[in-house]
Image 1 (cartoon, rainbow, N blue to C red):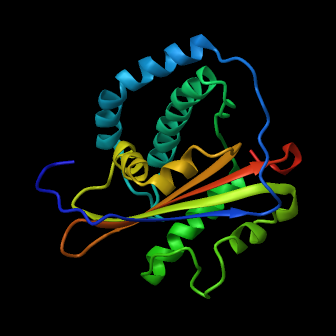
Image 2 (cartoon, one colour):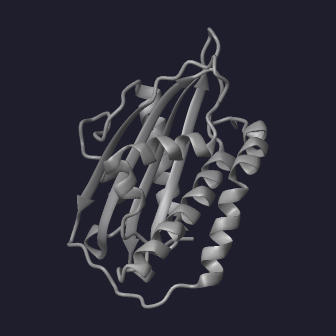
Length: 217
């Protein structure tokens, strides 16, 4: 982002235990995947520059291209950390899969904050953010755990995926959530253009460890 861009970034995190937290030991790690991750990271700056120039808001104030780009950076990051964990005899992290209902819920969370001009893990009616998963007809008792990262910005330009990920990385609790023992993710971005120029925007990451029958693709 240009040096003259004025930014106001805030982040919060919630990681809610629903029915317990379990890890499954997975032995071995693909060297091919590790090498691929390295190549992806080397190309990150070039890819981000190209994507940033293409980021445009749709009629709902969303940007699916940016949402996808965030996941495309997050999974290689998880893979890189996973390689180090395996080398130290620890459990490998799974690459996250997009889940249709989680995406819808994440977009709704960002839209609620944008529409009602607030920032937090409670909803406009003061209920917990977890209730949005119930509204999407998830059977919460069948989810091992779920978590939420949110970020707010007021910038002269729309943010890039790398800028969003980097802010989360700099926060210990947010970074821990991005590297959690999840299987699925939903990412929702919402923004509006300000009358005086620039944008106000919100991004939500919803994480979950889902049983196979719970996932919706």
